Length: 278
Ligand SMILES: NC(=O)c1ccc[n+]([C@@H]2O[C@H](COP(=O)([O-])OP(=O)(O)OC[C@H]3O[C@@H](n4cnc5c(N)ncnc54)[C@H](O)[C@@H]3O)[C@@H](O)[C@H]2O)c1
Image (cartoon, rainbow, N blue to C red; front, top):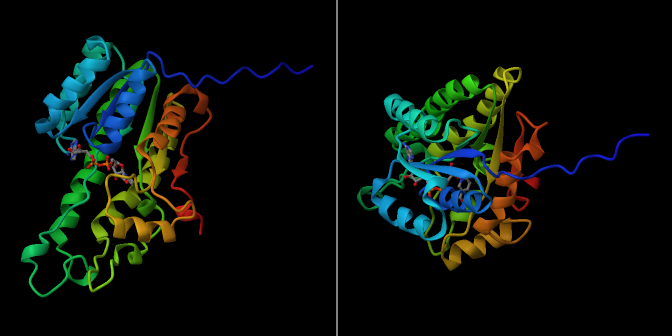
């Protein structure tokens, strides 16, 4: 007789989880959700301007010893090294790294003159360099330092945050608001985020016999007070007909952070309302 399968544990209680870019829309949502579930969370971000508000919000809800706010620039090795050693000092381990920090470079539309800088042929290439520096090089650097700590422990779990633009090209009609108001999703975000799924496979296979697993999650279009024109375009193009509520990401992130996903490594979990399904 086969044994009845054990209930898979989707608990993340007591796991020590570092979230990069944790003061932003998705990072802060996930950080609070993880804390609510009993994890110990390190919120790390380059934007110190938001630190006081974030601290106040967390202190209202969670015990002071369950979280740490850290200033982190993922593009700088000394900054990454410092944060990882702070985590080891305070919590003694690092169970999960969520590589969430990224930029979506903005150009100066007002001073663009007669050309549309979001069009590929005029796109300012220095913005591509900036995005590559953060979204690609920065992700590699913080992962290096996290892996050094995880190797010492003999275990670790990395969740890389990709995008549907890691998987497919943007449908540029999403950014066509009629009456001549037309933007284009520029190439920097697409180029730099396309790196994430294959980086995930690289890390997953590199460390597969050393106790570290690595998966990616693909969110898409998290609602953040977008205007009516965008919402209308989006509803037409999305199979589910709507944007993502930030809370809908909590389940998939928790699953990947927990031991319930223990046989998953190198995979890419799509949470996109069906965007890439047609
Ligand atoms: N919001 C969406 O709809 C969406 C969709 C698909 C994928 N994503 C991905 O989700 C992740 C989070 O997106 P978001 O919408 O919350 O973005 P956001 O801009 O709200 O947050 C990103 C955070 O990263 C921080 N950051 C930037 N550069 C940094 C650096 N060098 N070091 C450390 N921190 C840095 C920023 O200060 C910011 O707080 C990104 O990887 C993004 O590509 C977002």
